[in-house]
Length: 258
Length: 257
Image: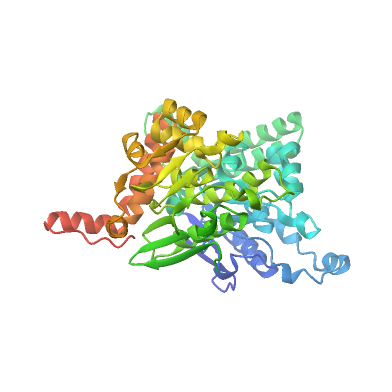
């Protein structure tokens, strides 16, 4: 699957790795790169060797944002016809957990890509920012929506309107990243975190992710009905039988993914 | 490239010299920016394993140049936009920074010396926390660092009285790492810096980082971070060299990686 031009991919120990690979451009995102990222995520999603997806960037930074050269001559009509953001919608349909391992600059489209992940592990030198407003535009790939759903309107509006840089500590404080680690240990820690999730019974992981995501858009009542159906559904799995028997028999479960 | 400072790298040491001797090396916003830029360059260069900040002429730095104040900014803005970023750059630098205090260090010049890891002080030098003498508070991180270095009571005394602190008094209160005579100044300065420059630079950076962390963390949190720090140190080539040299009973040759 390594015919990609702007990313590198690999699979190891249940983790599907995606490396943004334009280090000289600080991993500036272009349309082809996003399309490669999304296609790889979809391929990993149906690959039984992959339990979790880990997205990171080669070089100094995660991603300094979108390639502005690519957009400078766009018009509303070319944007409508290109429909570039449709690729981004597909990230939400990926069933396996996506972990973003971020460092240094996470700006603009890079920030939106990070927010599309389920978890973020950040190096202590990470800075997030939506600089779009300074170019007379705005986030277009989910920034205003995802950030607001994660931290609430108060800080989201402030950050997006001021283009202020958000340091890792602040990001942790406001709850849109999971953990801060020393830059030297970023990949080691991210892989360890991914490994923990990769060991969980995959069907439970899928349905938990799906249910938690429903909480964002559903009313509490509807969300609880949805959760219940997924809970019932897991009782059709062999991992549920194994997990509960192991608990009763006081031994460690051996999950098979079935 | 630089107008208010000079910058050169020699034998692993970056020499950053404040270069407005006619103005006793007083700060202008341009100088703030140039110091910030030079520290960033040092931090990012593999050739640099120690940094010296010193002053050209008879002063180290006399603080803000009061004749060059940007009238369009209030003092809060000057600190946030000019001094703050410079102090942040110094604080985030993993490499050892030596203030070679060749003459008077007053006001923000005192603060600059405080933000460094070592203060080598000429016998002719002095420190003045001059802010109170014009009705201001010590700024540019001054109180933050001063209280850690000399303790609360002494920090308050120096800040409220605004009196001159001689080199020998600076040594007595722990402000000076070392007092050096004028005759031996250049030679001792170079020797001190070069000695630091051959130490395991990565470990030095980690020690700086985790010592700073002690001020912000509980013991539990600190011990977790400390383990992370030691993991990083354990991955360096210098650790491997240090252990090998110890086993082979020879002097280690650290490369800073």
